[in-house]
Length: 472
Image 1: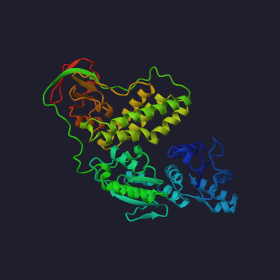
Image 2: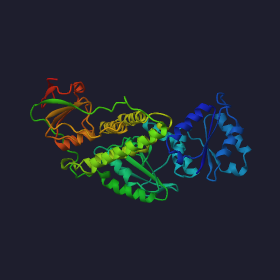
Image 3: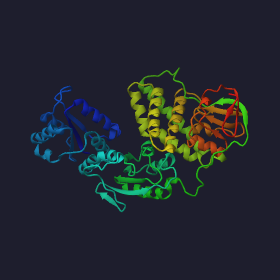
Image 4: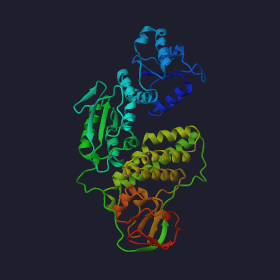
């Protein structure tokens, strides 16, 4: 694996850039990185001797890539090459790549074992996604993709135009991630139409937040021993619209109220409270989180594998996608790091799920935005499991109106059409997984009623077919 050196006039800037890049790959996959920045921790400047020392620290037979910020950093780095052994200098490369974006791209590329040429190429292309997103032509070299075969000695690429009506949302994204399980290959994805990526194909959250919509061009690049197999699997999956078969009838149509419904209010589940949670030492909290994660996974697996007959067409895809989100390293790595730093598990779960939910909500497609609901659902279930409380909702068997902020998938899967006459939410979305399961169950959904969050349990309300409510 290559080594990386960061040369900057500011020690704080260099450390922050390395810290950001470190977030992109697991600790055991990171290349060696050394910083030669500032004359000391507070004084701006560069020192050729310090650069030479940093190069020696991360020297590798595979090469060393040196990142630089401003002009005199280049001069210091060039002088440093005169201080090191000529054999070492031969395998050192000074890159013109942007410091922050290039370092992030290099860290990801190097972590896969890519060679110096490939890592440098990825680093130099670091500004391409930003430039494309802003509608300007990026300057300098950037990777070209080919439908027919390898783009370089470092990997293979292909393009695919998405036909999925709702793009590469959580369920087809989960199918993509699952298809690559067990392969020794680094697979990265880009949304060429919107200039987003690269994203690791091993992370459902990264894949789903590429904002890939119908008609967008997906670029897939794979490297490693199983790269060809990975691309074969993804080509086959893409030919089937990533599991969103065009002739499967699509998602169930929402049920409609045909007459007024009058019944007492039952509340939708609220987030589990933090009050009363007693955190232990970090090692105990880590174990507590692992147990909670396993318990939630078992619960979601049961909902996926043993759904009611009316939910059988949609439940497996919904809950398998949620299980993939639950296991996603973007979430679990952050929680583990927080806990190791002393944060209680329940606080970290909430913060990290909120963080990932915000990534979905920041997307421009309303359908993909509603995948944030899955993260809030996982947060609720994990917090319940951490508190050792019941995960299942078990709504009453008597007739009722279910009301609250939003309906999550796990709750929807437990509702009985004979007793839950209608669900009323303050949230306005109708394409969340809870709404999809509700439609499959034939239970009407009324959205965008702000007062639904305030209705008292047991209050009798009347919901009309046009969505108006009386008596609350």
